[in-house]
Amino acid sequence: PGNVAQLIAEPDIDGGLIGGAAIDYLNLDRNALETLPPEVASLTGLKWLRLNDNRLSTLPDLSALASLRRIYLRSNKFEAVPEALRALQGLTDIDLSDNPVREVPEWLAAKTGLENLSFTRTRITALPADLTAWRSLLSLQLGELSLPAEEMARRIDALRKASADKLNANTLEQIKREIAEEFVDTVSRNQHTFDIKRFIHQIITAGGSKPH
Image 1 (cartoon, rainbow, N blue to C red):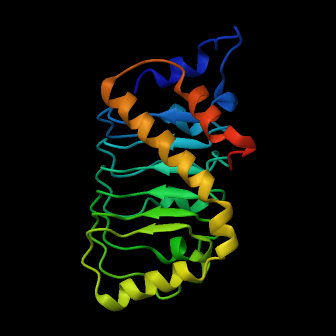
Image 2 (cartoon, one colour; image 1 turned 45 degrees about the horizontal axis):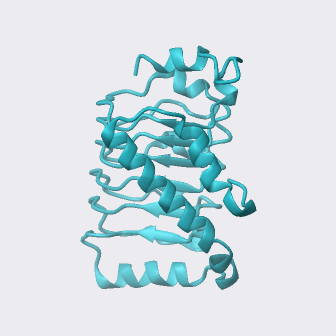
């Protein structure tokens, strides 16, 4: 955690300063974080933030991260969906699996532009009444929840309303993303060190696709 400020000021491989606006990917998985380092909120160019397997229960104001698209919060101590995510209009992916989250707030159900949500192994027992905004979803993961059959049916219906053309167009993107994420997880566990940000960017942009 204490190295985040140092990272922002370190030179990149071309000799220039990285700087907060230039960092678009940050992996702080498995750092035993109880609070988010304040420097993270200054990374205005950040698009992908990984905070899996920490001890976080709240997030600070992240409204400066207008470019953020993906935030992974798996295996922390969140009892509620962090209010800090509400102001992030560009979010497409949120992973809150393996947290003691008890409900999905109405503001998240009304959030447009979402593509991938995961609440697997949380304590959610019902979904919000209006899921209209979730028609943009490509995946809604609710594994191992105590959801009654009617709630599961509503989840299926919400996904069914997504455009088939959109699903087909995003299939390759999804596959590349899953490969990239699995790779990062493996490297993190083994504590290897090299330029993961650049590697991930190369995978996601393979074949001419551009990251969101």
